[in-house]
Length: 161
Image (cartoon, rainbow, N blue to C red; front, side):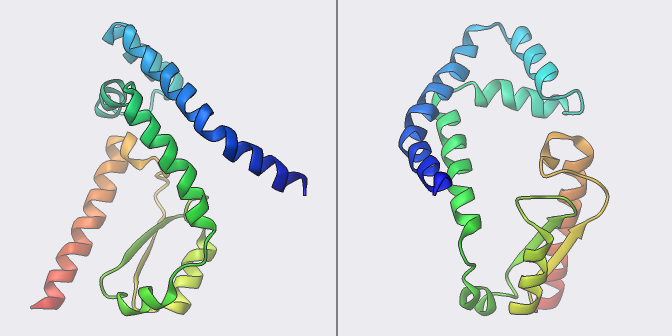
């Protein structure tokens, strides 16, 4: 019951919190670029590539971009809690591909198991090299996922011929 009340209050305040967070982050645009880069590098980790730091400094310091990011994060959690559309997945299993991480709360391995049972023709993979959900923030993670997707596409076209 307490969780239900808390989630209701959070939903009411989420718009205000989102706007406030977006404004605060957008105000970082007042910093010179070098200061923003140092802040992002020090707060988000030295493991991020220069490209990821540059993209963060360029795009995430914009008010509307941050509002979109926060909205997407909020609605993703709602969608992840919903029951998958198994009929859709079975009808389109030859067109779908899912990549799971070993320890990724966004795509837990029990969902991998459930998809493999409900839509067995779906392309399912588990990344086992240690890249995190934020794979795109490192060069190694970006290259690994790009190669994985390229292989999926190549295999798909091979099957069409």
